[in-house]
Structures are given as C-alpha cells and as structure tokens.
Image: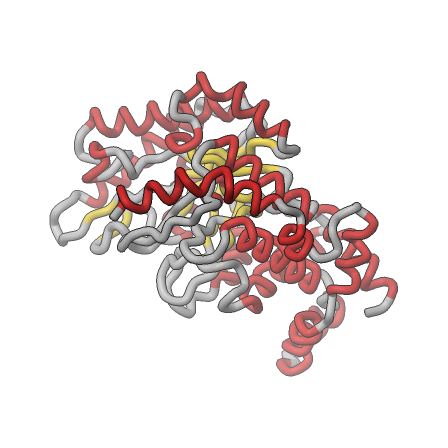
Amino acid sequence: MNDTQREKVQEALDRFEIEVPSWGFANTGTRFGKFLQPAAASTIEEKLSDAGQVHAMTGCCPSVAVHVLWDFPNGLEDTHGVSRIAAKHNVRIGSINPNMFQDQIYKHGSLGNPDEQVRRAALDHMIECVSISHATDSRDISLWFADGSNYPGSQHIRKRRHWFIDGLQELHSHLDPGQRMLVEYKPFEPAFYHTDIADWGMALLMARAAGPQAKVLVDLGHHYQAQNIEQIVAWLLAEGMLGGFHFNDRRYADDDLTLGSIDPYQLFRIFHEISYWEWETDGQADIAYMIDQSHNLKGKIEAMIQSVCRAQELYAKSMLVDHDKLAAAQTACDLVEAEECLQEAFATDVKPAILEWRKSRNVPANPLTAFRSGGYLERVTAERSERNMAAVSSYA
C-alpha cells in the first residue's frame, strides 16, 4: 500500500461510524429457543455499558440503536434517564425502533391489520417513538413490520397497502425537519404467504408515499438467496432513497450471523457501490450504518467487536478501488480489467493502515485482545451470572 492509499484509508476511517444495537447485548435466540449466557445484559444500563466497551475498543461506535418496548418500558418517562446513562458510558442514543410485532393484538398485523383499533394502537406507539426520538435527540426512526398473511385469500392485499400508506403518512407528519423514517423490508417470516413490505421496491414506494423525509433501510439478511444486494443499493442511491443498513451475514434466511462471517466480499461490493457513487457525484452519501445481529452462541461483546472490526476493514478496502481505471474499463467493456479493479482492492492488506489509525486515535491496536485482557467481561460475568443462570431453570 502506498502513501496515497494509506491516507485515503485513514480519511475514510475518520468518517466511518457504525451503530450497535442494544438488543445485541441481551439474551436472544432463534424461533426454537435460547442458550442463555452468564454475561448477557438485561437492563438498559447494562446494554449501554457493554456498547460503551465496543466503542472504547474500536473508536467508531458512538451511538446505540434502541428498541422502545425493551429499552423504554415506560415510554417517554424513561428518555432523560436513558440519555444520562448513555452519556455516562460515552455513547449516545441512536435510531429508535418501534415494536409492532410482539403484542398479542398484532396477531394479524399492525398498520395492515383489518381492525381499525389495532392500526390506531400501532400508529400511536410509533408516534410515541417519534416523541422519544425528539427527547433523546435521535434522528432516525427505523420501521420494520412483521405484517403479512400465511394463507391465500385470507387478507385483502390492496386494502392493507392502502392502510400502510395512510399510517406512514400520518407518522411522517410528526417528524421534525431534520429527522428521517427508514422503511425496512423482508420477503418472508413470520408471514409465509405474503409480506406487506416484501422487497426494496415496495419499501421505496411506501417511503415515497409517506413523504420526503422517508427513506429505505436495507437489511442484508432480508433477501432471497443469491440476490444481488449491491444492485439494489445502486438503484436506491440513484433514486436518492437509500437511508441506512442493518448489517449482518446470512447462510440461508435471516440468520443474523456475525458480519462478514459468510461472505465478506458481498459487503465490500456494497461499500464499493457507495464509494463509486460518491466519486461520480462528488458527494457524501447520508447513510446510517447499523449492525443488527443476535448472538445466540458467541459471546455478545466479542461478537460485536468482531463485526465492527470487519466492517472497518471492508470499508477501508472499498476505498482503494481505482475509480478512474474502473470507469475506463467499464466503458471499454474490458471485463477482466474491470473485475481486477475490485479484486485487487479486496486483496489489499489494509490492516497496517488501520493499525496506524488506531494508534493516532488512542484506540487499542487489537480491539478484541484489548477487551479480553481488560477485565470487563470477568467483572460483568460475576455481577450478572447468578441472575442469568437462574433464568435457565425457569426457561427450561
């Protein structure tokens, strides 16, 4: 790596921030069950403390995404206390995630429910989430809906679409000028016949119908096998509608595996599409990067540090693509040369440049090693183990 490349990597790392999720530090599992961990966080204070460790080790995770029902059980009453706790641990509250899938009333959907009272309850909850975002100085409201149906003919698909648009438009009217609502999509699960917002095109249409402060959120796990996610990213960039990501990795469906554990080249290609767009437009894409993983087997803080470091590495690699050379090769339809532009950047060892960046920012040279030797995990394991392991017998 030459000096120009090294400088480019370090400039990129200076602007790269990635949000961690509060629920990624708690005991979570699969639809089949959970394997509880002695050090898992239960309270919002514990989650923010763990998130603070990830930020201290990596230097690029200053914000924490929160789930309102899990982290703000009393709604607006909790906002000032939670913000103080976040500041105590050197992080801030990031995206606000409403919960429209856990309550029993959502058995047949939330904004798409045929029952007007249920739709109203879901909308009121989301409006409260906007109020929480105001109180915590959070910009983004992340919206994922489990709405759909399992059997043909059991729901009126076009009516549900109409109800969704009405609800999202009303929610949009509660946003402050600088805020955004990010509409997420998922092709299936828990609905297996039809999902109300099943793909990026539906999310795009919903966001456009909602209003100018609505964008699309792309979750890497929410796609069919072999889908070309970077093409979706390129289209959303071209349409000015890419708002954010939920990063994870997947083997089959929405597995929420550790970022980069299955296909690191995919994330590199996604980052490249963004950097290529920025090079062509001489602009800066306004994209919220966030991890959305539930670590059922790996240690939660270690898995998060792993993911963040992998994201930094792949982001740095994507900055090394020679765009002038690539553009010329594409114009000439020189297939080999064009692909080599990506392959060479992906194969470049960026770790020395990242190490220099960490030293200059007083971040541990090896974040995972530093965390393991810091004593934090041993301390919180001792503090939380009895409570977490007591839950094993009750869960069994």
